[in-house]
Amino acid sequence: MSVSTYIASIESSRNIIRNKLVELGMAASGDKLDKLATAIESLINQGAVSVTVREGDTYTIPKGYHNGNGTVSGVSGGGNYNLQAKSVTPTKNEQNIAPDSGYYGLSGVTVAAIPEAYQDVSSVTAGAADVLTGKVIVTADGAITPGEMINNGTVDKTLDVTTITYTIPKGFHSGSGKVQIVLETKTVTPSKTAQDITPTAGKVLSKVTVEAIPEVYQDVSGVTATAPNVTDGSFFVDSTGALVEGTMPDKGAVAATIDGLTTTSYTIPAGKHNGSGTVSLTSDIENALAAI
Image (cartoon, rainbow, N blue to C red):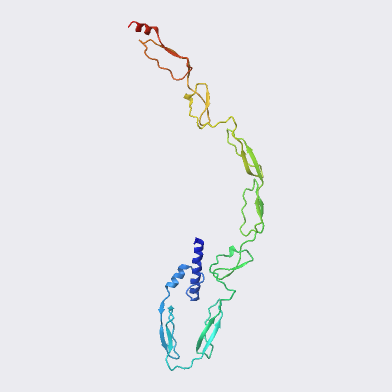
């Protein structure tokens, strides 16, 4: 069972309970479940009440629930009672049904059905502000209430550069009014600087076509080189898109000798080497080796 179906079932049961309590004079037509529960809780169970009365005496039936087995009986030897049957139609006001003059009491009262013009309005939630002016409703408390909703009919409005918003007036609208704008499309080519694309005066952008990045631009997000990694005098674009000049020194062809006596090693200088540089042993080391 869906939530809405379950809620509808609860509301139906509530209405049955409330109608019965209203009939018993224990609740009002607008009471909610909590008040209805309190009213039922206060109902006294009188069970089967039995009493005997003498002619001319009266007995006040105690307030509460009676199981239908109680009896009120007269003392034997009473007189001949002339009883009257009556009928009554429900009205908005409470009615006390009593026998006419010459009758000892009532033999029965027939209560007609609620007239067609009357309906259960306990579930009505609409108020004056929800009803079109010139129309009338009955609210949940039974009050005849004229509508107060303004009838705006058909409202038309065109928005432009000077009027960018329109406040829909409070009230009823026929559904034929419209708020409209004049549309246009524009095209833009990406550039190194940000561009604000705005509509022509009196129009609204329906589409902006951004062309592809020009061929001269490339994705540099993967660049990891920094100035020390690029030859001095050469330029590159780093990962932020900045143009940077390299600082790596160009060593060209470096030549060095090791004599094996005073010089036993050579430290290759940092920088770019063209591949033609050499490090060689001098003849002194050759002679020294030959003499061994």
